[in-house]
Length: 308
Ligand code: NAP
Image (tube, rainbow, N blue to C red):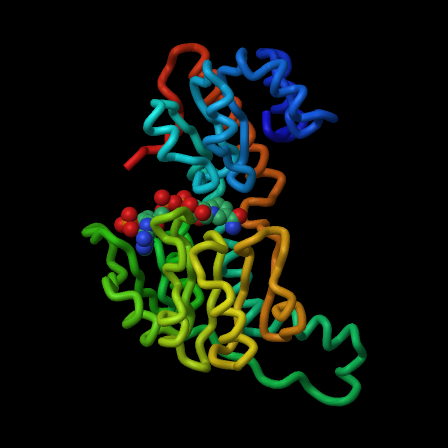
């Protein structure tokens, strides 16, 4: 185990299996040297991932159970080549992550966090807060219309936003129009929401060019992965006022957040909390255990990652 789960699910694993906690080891090297030949499964998270270097040291490794839907931190090419299946925790977190995306949207466009600071600082005594931006009637462009992207689209519609989206494949059952050209979509939208997976295929997808195509009145929300955005270019755009604001839950080098963002009043920052509710984290942790159980019982994984 590269980390613990919630106490209930950590206990389940410890009862059913011989579990070694790399995160709690005083001397990780010594623990690895001692147990590596016996390890048959890894429990990790989206944030921690799993390197080829670590897997290379585990000759009997049979599977990886990941706490989180994003598996971009795991060396998937290595797993594919060695035939090591990976499970993740899709669906159970979809509604919470979509809620956070909409929460960040409203917090940013309606300046809720800035308004809170304004009241606490006693500034209300001196007059009203500057006006904010209406959501209804604006256009949201969602990058990655998967499980979470669709849940965001439904919520965005409920707030009166028009929805367009960008993805690699057409989805005939979806009524929201697809925009195959991301730069053109960026030109069109008032709000760009990033909801695709991280990893090599999407690294820097929201490039300097895409950011430049946004208007000074446009907002950006990212609940996907920091790697998807050219972060230095985003910081530059925000500092220079080339876009109106951003709501960011994920960053390129977590937990480090680019210092200039900390001083910007039009940016709302959250510490990668898309799935961080009691209910969802419990369901995610249970799915990690259930996938382990399925594997050791010789049953198919409940939620296997589908390699390309
Ligand atoms: P999903 O159902 O697999 O959806 C991903 C979507 O992204 C698919 O519709 C896919 O469509 C699209 N996509 C993939 N590559 C793309 C590309 N290069 N350009 C544009 N679109 C692309 O995954 P999900 O369950 O919605 O999760 C999405 C991601 O959210 C996760 O991978 C994770 O990184 C992130 N997440 C963040 C948090 C958080 O705490 N902030 C929590 C959970 C998940 P096409 O294949 O047609 O392109």
